[in-house]
Amino acid sequence: VQLVESGGGSVQPGGSLRISCAASDLTFSSYAMGWFRQAAGKEREIVAAINWSGSSTYYADSVKGRFTISRDGAKNTVALQMNSLKPEDTAVYFCAAKPTRLFTIATIEYDYWGQGTQVTVSS
Image (cartoon, rainbow, N blue to C red; front, side):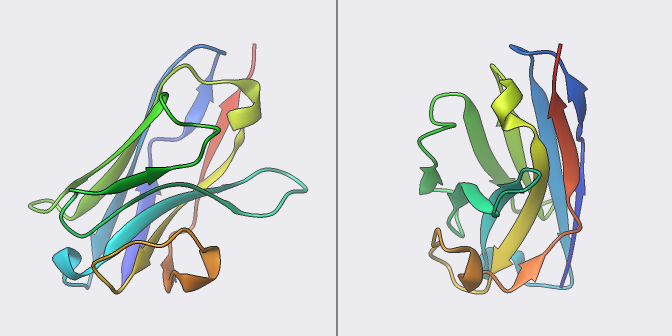
């Protein structure tokens, strides 16, 4: 299983970014997917998760109403649309895959991880 993130970068507070994760060497529809982030000096935390079909999602309270997770089964991709970004959203964002149809929010339960993409929110 390979996960490759893209789309990170720098943005001013209040701006938007869309990051994507391309998955390969897996049956994508059999995997729940998650986005996690890790800020400097902090532990990795869940941002959002989505089940195998996209019919169920989870958002951390800190991003609810600002971020949207989605998946495209035809392209084997999962995306995170981030709006109204704040400086505290600055972190390395990781895509993760769990070989079950239902997601969880525990970092330890995801088996496969991408290399991460940096998101920096600063004026």
